[in-house]
Image 1 (cartoon, helix red, strand yellow):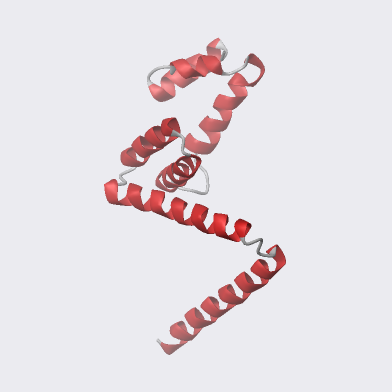
Image 2: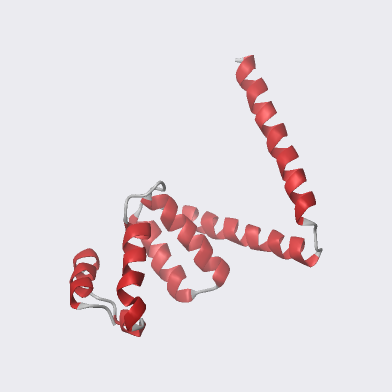
Length: 134
């Protein structure tokens, strides 16, 4: 259970203290809120819209109905429409799909990293050539 100070802070951020926060163990409760506050709600390198889409994609990949609902609503609050939310979920599904193939085929990580570096180099070269043509 969160401390009274943390409870007041959560209520200030969210308008209430969600009941599920009572499931947090005493030693980690305040810290757990701090992580959410600082990482998800705080000012970081990623904009709120980006964080909401990352979170929605991760929630969908984990098949968590609670997280999917929360982060879908969070994305909506950040101005992401249904098309954008669906795209985030589709990207997450694409990543999970290819991860399954890579693991199932036991692709060598070093080979994968080498090929990825070659692909990135090629794309960067194409971009540089296109910029030089302007």
